[in-house]
Length: 70
Image (cartoon, rainbow, N blue to C red):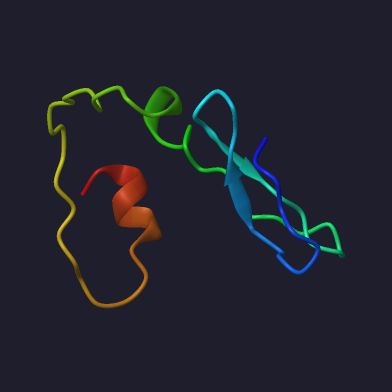
């Protein structure tokens, strides 16, 4: 790990494996790691799904129409 002086308070450092290592502050807060976010953990294309139904906007509550497929 790289050396950090006593006056520095980094939010992250580069680990020996080349990946970011997130450092907690004095309250235990740290930057969330979203590198695996997304469909199936990211890095995978979202599958194509055919359109089955289109619901067009109407005024008022439409719960019944949506449930009935209108």
